[in-house]
Image (cartoon, rainbow, N blue to C red; front, side, top):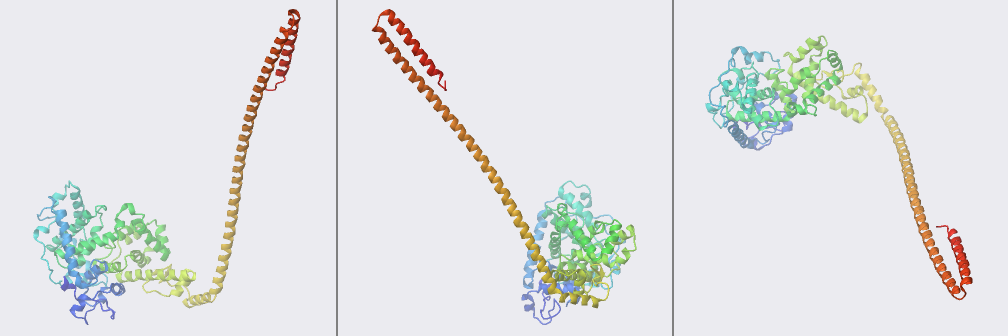
Length: 566
């Protein structure tokens, strides 16, 4: 592996990202690759502008930009050996225990039918600018792999008879992957020409099966095979163990990067399928509102054609050379996908505006191969740059879109930008620039006016806030006063009850005291009367006794009758 990549090192003082003409082998091995320069070179002109053979550069470039390989070539061999060991360890662990995954040679009727087409037919449909060296047949062979090709026992898929009646979850998963793998890019000889195609399809199925088993929380869905197929096509220069393990890691990187697209519960998340489709439709409405309204009037929703575009990363909309060219840009910027989709629609806008519902849907679901892929790439990059420049201009100056477009100027590659062709406003550009210059002269006045407006607005806001605070404080004080009054009333009521109970106790005490006093007085008078009676005769004494007793009773009754507490 080291011999195949040791000559790919960037020189920072050149325009190419990969150049080794002035460096020794040891220097190339120990000099880290400048990934930013590499990404810039890929974005500007593609791999065809770099030193070296494009077919050999693309696998290394993708592995470097995805972070699978480290920037220093001297450590590539150890990294690849570890990845290769880990992957085949997972294969042994997950497949050797499956009795239905036997070693017989599998045959699927019609799988290798020559009528399905070949790669030569596919290349003839590509644009004139598409690199022809992407075909495995046109690229020079890679250096020998440090590991021998896998033995025949590792190559076959499970017999189709075992997959037609699955009984276990693993068999059901293998059946689903098996059906999709057989339909993967059926017009390219790389996948359909025996005997190598048998190994490649078996390899593709193992890659998807292992990934699905190791990522049990995500269900395998159709479309993953298309992504894995493109990766296998680019990396599969030789049918050996190392290429399959690297295919697994790069496929896993792409699937994990776009995992939310395949998770139904995350459709409405920022990176989910619905949100991804909405980003494209919003971009189309922003940059080409005429086409957007035309499709909207025909009731053509974005999901009708964008679902496949997004979930397969456009691998089914172009032929293979054009697909890998677009993927070059994806690896340099994983957020540019919506801009690529918008650029694709803008490039066929004239045809869209002349078609009805059926015509537009057929055009978008079967994107024309005649569209130059370099125009798509340039249009996407242009929209990306234009949006950021206009946004920065509006944030700094507060101008409208038209004025900012005039200030930014023409951006190369833009088909439609903010409703204007090429992103250039209608009318004399010079007059627009003069208008911008006039607005610059008035900038200070506008800023001062805006600051005054802001100050007044802030003052009104503070005044309103103060009034609200005062009103709230007044209401709080009223509530506190009511609470205090209620407590005072309760306290006064308790005091009145206490006074009444105290007066009642005093009245009771006074009544008892008077009754005791009268009782003592009565006893005293009875004693005195008894003593007086004993000193006189019987008749006279009896009359005196009766008169005294009657007097005592009268006084006692009068005293008791005047007692207010009886």
